[in-house]
Amino acid sequence: MTNAEPVEDRYDDDLPSPTPAPTTPAEWDELIDEWDELRHGYYLGNAPGTVLECAKNLRASVADGTSTPETALWTLGLVLIGPYVIYARPDAAAEAQVLEAMRAVEHALGGVPCSHDAHPCDDMPLTAELENFPSVLKMLAHPEQDAEHEAHLADDELWPDEEGAQSWYEGRMTREIWTCPRNLAGLARAFSD
Image (cartoon, rainbow, N blue to C red; front, top):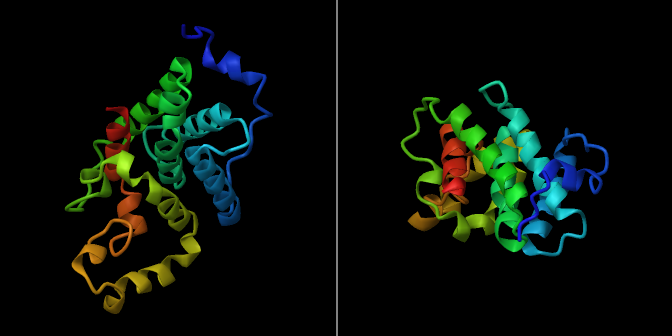
């Protein structure tokens, strides 16, 4: 039997006052580590509350029909931890909140034009690739390292085989492609399917 109590009411007592969104790369790193612990099943905090807080922040980041600089982090974070309330600890009300946040991303960003030939969302089964999401999230959380990261990607000696050079997690792991609105909308759509 599913609990019909609204999810906001059920978790309000369990949630501390709203945690401010991370503002520094170090704060994002800490949150990303918590998300990865939750995905692996050994997070000691309020897991449903953490998932719902991510969903709430994601909805807020696309509320005006556009995205904020943090939208990519919230979207990928929810792709990483959203399955907790769908599969690990099924909760219909929490699942509805997660799916609503993903639909908001798809609605806000799905029609934004871009010039990319391909996106990570085009050819990755999400269930097989979640292991690599924390590294993408940490790359996105550190814009100050972009120049060093781009130089690293351009070093042909680091990519002796075509597979590594063509991997979304290795040779093609750029901020531009991962934060592309079409990629975020595609990930949100794939998550909801």
